[in-house]
Image (cartoon, rainbow, N blue to C red; front, side):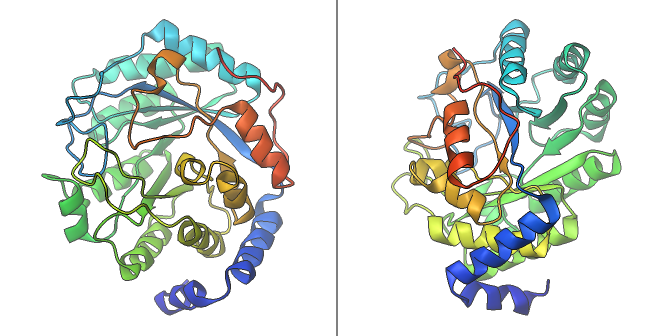
Length: 322
């Protein structure tokens, strides 16, 4: 899809665009919704991203790293619920030994060899990525956040878009199925920036693309900023579905946070085919505070959104993890 085509799609009636995307999703991927269990195992982070509540400078956050036993209990609950992937997510913490994360992956693969494992732990060395791949990790999620180098540097003090793209390149070279993505409505972003994001995602040939609206967090420099637009986010999801027909496209928790009733259902209807309910142990959920008022999306919420969208999934139990 060319730049001019994307601008054209941004201006057509929303319902027309949504129907085109939904038809493409149905034709290429069918009606099944992939349900991926999100386990946020640590909120330690060395970065100082201006929009994120996990930022290093946030002293109001209780830091945690769950034990391997707690992790495996969460994994077992996710498998029992019928999810198809385990997503291990944390802040960016080079102090956590790469071998420890490799051991998490090995344990999951040993106990549940049929489960795919996705890592989302930020920028690390190529050697560490290779270690985790050898341990059995299948996928890696690391959003490029914005395709505008100047905006990237402003949002991520001391970091560069070039470094982020290097990480994405290393992961693809090592054989991971790579996921990227970006934020809609982050302060300083223009419509032109969003178009460049879509073009970059095409160039990266990602297997998954996570797109969610900006939600401010009180303990960041962007506290009090305007929230991202849910309608624009849904429009971007539909364009991504048309640009990348086979990409896995989640209806994000941020959509559910800004629109608790319809957000994720509308995301599925706009071309989405993935939900990521939380299996983070209850004692830690409130401390993985990337943004404020984060919606707790559990199995019951996922099932409700999938049914409302007229879709199917592999979930077998309508119960929350205790």
